[in-house]
Length: 413
Ligand SMILES: Cc1cc2nc3c(=O)[nH]c(=O)nc-3n(C[C@H](O)[C@H](O)[C@H](O)COP(=O)(O)O)c2cc1C
Image (cartoon, rainbow, N blue to C red; front, side):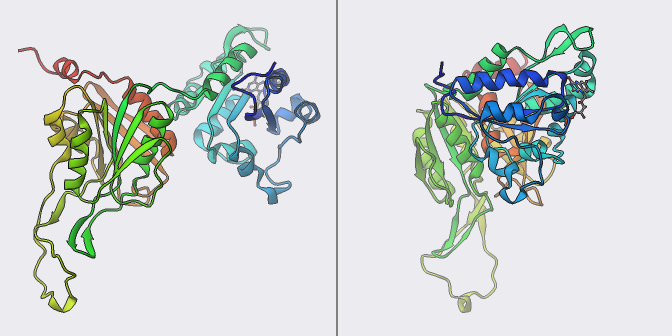
């Protein structure tokens, strides 16, 4: 009974040291019967409960349980490289903590830090452990990073006590695996206009004013929105990045060109995501020929402000969601709040630039999300592709009627 969603999929099933470890045998069978290829990873404690041989015979491939044996094939990296899902079932309180905190002292912990595919965790433990504040905090950290947690069920536990801690049923786990593997099309019918990358303001034909934006965040959002069914137009400053599949790219160079390109398409859009790092200043006069160094007698370069794109588009707004980004070196929340309100945005994503963890150029990012009616919310560091999906989840639930949102946040006079 193969299953269209599971057939041909590569699942890494990680088994940890819970009394429910034997239930992973049933899960393995269910997944392979439905056409998935399953590779099993075991923690040292898991091997106290079930012999690796059982999983090896049923999966048809050796179990990975040691970070160091056969280290030349780098299993902790290569195993999940082509995986569609890492499923940790059952997951102990210990492994939950390790993954939440990024501890990498075994194969599973190391793998979780290099993961490119979705991660699904099915905890199983004593009821008092599951409700413990520490375990709950770890589960929340993981959820906030887009990890799917399948909550344990209530019932009789191995201890003989009743409580919430039993591994979710095979049916629940299988249905959740199918949901996670299902390509989401929740942005179908939406038209998303995204700006990305830096702008360049010429001084002369070979010199320009710009910034260190790589465009990776905006491109990741464009890619994710298109994958989730949206029509996407990406207005991009100069970058080295390839245009994501299914996205229409409009290349621009200066802030003026970016404003024109966005303005021409703004009415079409249901959502604007302004992820570009638009230069704030440009040379008051630019030269049509290359200025020779001998000609430069040390006078200061006169600068002027570039157009405020968000403000200009706000004036054209009908019912688009408007999301801005703020790249700040300090006081992220304060600067972000003032931009959110001044430009009447529905959401502002504040990120840190400069320093070791600068959002510019990095493959990962951590941000603070600000909206008019809710408290600031931090999204921890994660790959920009994953962050793009988390941001789209949050943007999707914003109202498309800014008027109603604004009136809700304004006092009734
Ligand atoms: C009989 C027995 C059953 C256990 N069952 C569980 C369990 O269901 N859930 C859990 O979180 N820990 C359970 N533990 C504790 C874990 O095995 C222990 O925390 C171990 O360090 C987990 O290692 P791992 O996360 O690397 O697999 C159990 C321990 C024993 C001795």
